[in-house]
Image 1 (cartoon, rainbow, N blue to C red):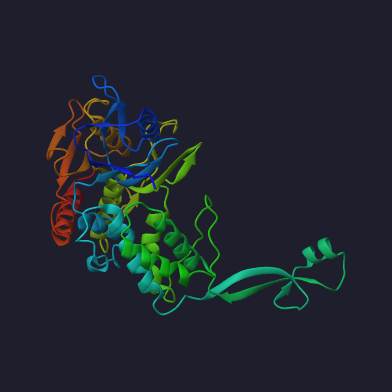
Image 2: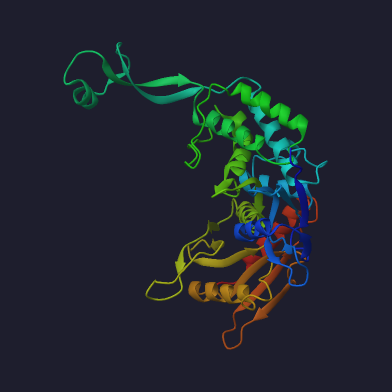
Length: 403
């Protein structure tokens, strides 16, 4: 077996040089997993820099040894899972449900957390439910599909085209869990004991119909009957989302899992703000669609818009995990927020960053008077402190006087 080379990077850390075959370097650059470019001063070396994606992927390039790129988040793994869990289920998530404090790497922690939740879900046996079934039969059950009976059998009595509700374990919830187990077994870096337990879960789900790769996940709805599945299904959605770069481009194959910290931070901030305003006379809308121009041709979707009792916009918030790159459009975040405030008719707007990525300050726009606040949220603290900081921020935002 060919040994796999491992390259470890840290999220948003300075670029480093690593010797790589050109084919692997070009594959990394094309995948946009990290920023990759040939070193202009050293032949055979590539300069690599991680952005906001964290996790691990393995690249299998023809005629080259496999290469695993592992990107370590700056926040502790336990804190990352708190952000994730709270975003998925702010009222039902408990930090102790996912025991990942002993892990430094994301993928082993994700695999262990998901396996434990699946095991808890299946401990009482596979959930059963009704599903719509259609078949050709010699016995009538359910209802006869008259149009299909005529089309296929030209009025013959038997066989019969029927439709009925089947009580079975082959339901969306179990199909999602089986797909999750299969996905986790293909991830690099999963510990041997976790892999063994995942194989046990796969055996439990052996009679469940596999999902077709590329198709949308089947829909499920939280109810009292499937409550023991909720946490497992929330984590399953994360494992099976398109943030998992598992694809084959020509002869190249990429297996792994990546979290986008930008999206994770945005989801957490907006979810926590919604929770902070729960029970008040304010209402919240996420990704609220608006237009910048009178002709309604320039669309805009602020992350979070707070509406007052009069149902008019009261405040606008955008969550930015990291400040816009200095070599990009200068201060693009501020211009974007100014556009939001102008279109919504608000005198103030709020940008929320992770602490260390932007200063805590405010800017008053010349000739307009609009004030743009930059808030710094400290992720390096216990969940209670973090949520307390969000509640304080919500109080400040709601206190802004509308025009």
